Image (cartoon, rainbow, N blue to C red; front, side, top):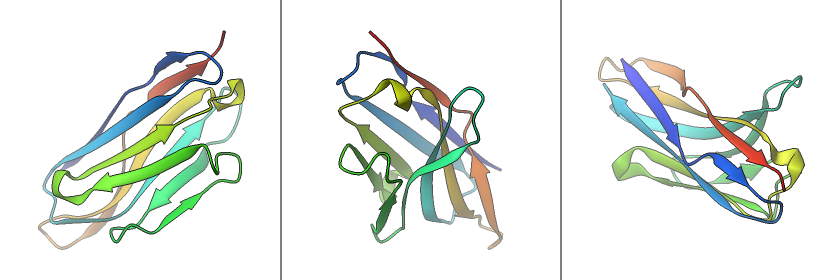
Length: 120
């Protein structure tokens, strides 16, 4: 089994910064694409950013230029540096990853989420 655990959420003022972390553990042979999603109250979950094992990245238009996704393959970890935060960034943020286990089966896993609140 594989677990994804996020950390780093919290309350921040508009214009501030937060860094989210997600660490994967368990029966992991390899991890391909890692992603950050978010879900605001009353809204659908949306993809914020993703990063391939080789470091290729994609961002939602709403966060381009403000958020940076990165990963450490040796630590099976992914990060989301969030700068110039806005109230509309308030949401629960979820880590997601495509994981190949030692059984050589690919599966998609989710973390439990971390809350980010941007408010003065």
